[in-house]
Image (cartoon, rainbow over all chains, first blue to last red; front, side, top):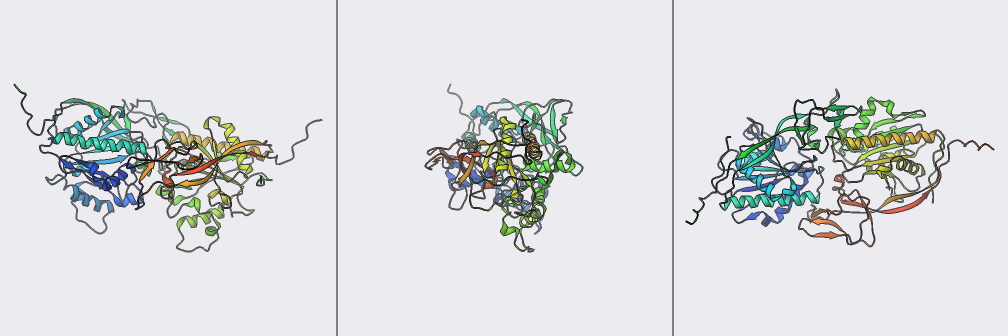
Length: 319
Length: 319
């Protein structure tokens, strides 16, 4: 396995972003809270910066104004010449790239944590780029060990060979937190508290790393997208049915060939016709209707993550 | 008790409206389905008309475009002179008033059923105007008896002395169905099926009435709004906390003085300081943040609903 290099210096420039989607309320209100109480984001070796990523969409309580900001951090947008007709989110992505990047440069932030909610029953989902992302996977492992009751699932979202286009891709390291189910525009206290605790533990992990902690190798189980499934639709493009009650809320559970996936408005069931089990996630996510995605199909992987050595050489054991 | 007159003629002009709020998906997709399969809305004595009430908001998957349509059926809007600058929903309310009304006229539709969803845990909630609305309350009773497993709750939404400004107020009789919890922009199969069954039973009830069925008197339990509670807010108007986990999802359950209602972002609890129990509903409804409503406080009433006589004189018992 080809692993990405782990950081060789302490992570001092750290940001926590909320409101990348303007109707995902947990991160929005956490960022607003931290802007008033920045000490909560301080650790001995660094102070994380709270960032409200999409203020215009947040003010409108919509996912975005012109286009999905979290699909806009691609070099084609970041490096093109600005024009007065640019979509709001293209302009905002360039601003964030200046603030937290520039992407793929030595000046980029060391770590960006991006806070999301989903209407799907995803529980506590940790979104890393790939199985090569050793630092993020050690962080995921730390969160799993600290919160066994949350059954944190790891989703490896970057498709092989594709450029990352999400917010944390502008930084050297990053992770997404995806907590649900929570309706768009609603702030549930239970999810707010859970996200707040997870963020604190992410910062604690970075502090441990900065202080020279060694993290041993481990086996990790994670999910990787292999495709998407659209809703059944009429010729006019409207839904002809919706997610089957037996699939609704079953994120990360195996879907077997022959299992029902959609209930048509005519009453008929549509069955999954794949050749082997997949693990659906983002089942019936409100924001994905317009993207033609009723759920994302993933495969389940198990792989080894190598040890992450201490930043400074550990002292030799006393002889 | 002063009762409204019950209909003296069969109800032949009946409409079922969805999409009065353009992101409440159950009614929207039921209406789209019935536009293709109108026979489902036919009964021997009438055919109900499906109406997509706010097509522009539905296309945008937003509650409304310019203003809340379901607060726009007041005479001040319906009877004012149209201008090119009218908000979209004012124009649309006038169109619907022409289609289904005119409000308070003899030409108005006999019955309008309006289909809604809420992000709150309201279960199956039936919204009638008042305890004087004998026809609607018999219909509620019929639904309660047909679906004992749904624990249908009755909410009497019209404040005494206020003009009704909701869609069904343009018709001679009406009822609202409010089913939840469902996120905005999401179509859950379980709620879709439940709403579909309830609509069929509403039409069956109208058919029974039209055929000359007598409905006996009964005792009804219902909830009536007595006030609203806003979120705690900062000086800038942002939330300073959210609905307490002990109150979240507890719609229609008694809230006692001293019970926690909000969890502040500072960690502190805010307690309910009223003098007696209230029954909160619409707890943490997404659409009500902008209205300054964290929940609606109701009181629980029990009252008698008089018998509803048959339309045509019942035959005398054989002597």
